[in-house]
Amino acid sequence: MLSGFITCQKCGCAITAEIKKQKYIYYHCTNGRGNCDQKSQNAKEEVIDSYIAKDMEELYISQKMVDIVYKAKLEELADLETYENHALNTVQKALESLKTRRSRLVDTFTTGDIDEALYRHKLQTIDNEEVTLTKQSEQLQIENPNPYATIELVYNRFKQGNTMAERYKTASPEQKRIILSESLSNSFLLNRNIVDLQYQKPYSDFRNLPKKPSFLEMRRRGDSNSRGLSPWRFSRPLH
Image (cartoon, rainbow, N blue to C red):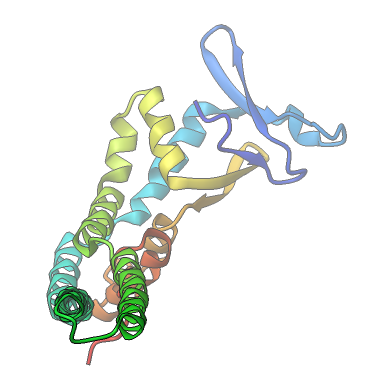
């Protein structure tokens, strides 16, 4: 169950599982480099499993505080969205204006009020402006994907961290592997014990937060997490 998630602290080789008496599972170093004494140090699976479940309890953060920060981020987004929508709307209105200018130019040329050389020059100018504005519109839409979806993603990750220990304790071996693949970066075994358990972001940040973090700590950590998840962080500061 835990194979692939544990490394030998002494030599850096992988930890492998071994079944004894057809029912007991032990873990030890593969001794891939041929000089590690940890190969004979057999760690019981239930001991390692219990340690991981206990350590996951450190991921818990007050759900009340999570909800407060979540609400604050939604309010922040509502203010920022007005600015970002304005930028995109300005570009789109400029594109609509170009269509009107092109139509009038064609009408002027058709009635003979402008010579062909000038007509071609003005039409090329409009075409160039359209290309530039279209690129700006596309870039604005790429830089500002649906922020509500990313806020929900981080909020759900916070909630998952709060329940991870209980979910892990009651999960089947297959489900535990899924939880570990989502949350663990690596862990290290030495002398039959886990000596270091490392989590992936954002769980590594949850692990290092105090039990009762302040509002500002939560906001700061939420922004930090968004660098990897693209969630509770926005493109420019609010004023």
